[in-house]
Length: 194
Image (cartoon, rainbow, N blue to C red; front, side, top):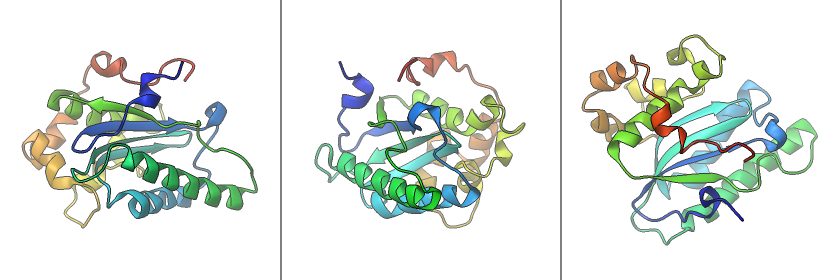
């Protein structure tokens, strides 16, 4: 029976945690330029369909937080997501001389239904590289949205919406200074065997 995390429809006006990982836990990013390629494809295929609040790209998986545009049909974003995933996979397969699926066959999606959960989730994404012991201080990780959200440089992220959720940029930074209880959102994360 397919998981609710695969079958949940992407409905207009709602916020979702979307994530996926490489088949058999294999890498989905092979070199530094792959992270930029992923973000370029993400912007190309999804920017007109949703607002991207946050992301983190880890060598064998990714997490996104996004809000589906109000004017879309149910699952219209899912169709675009498939195009995005296939485009990225085809480019990586060509560059890495590989064949087949790069990601698990279905991306996971979880409806984010409260502002508290959304704040904790954004922190969780940004803290993910430290959790996986890839870097000591997540604020220095180059493949997450943290630096873009606190920067004044142009971005495709929904920076104003995210910072407003925390109050101000300073409150956003302060929120990220405290280690939050992961157990509160643990039930929403990868299931064993998924």
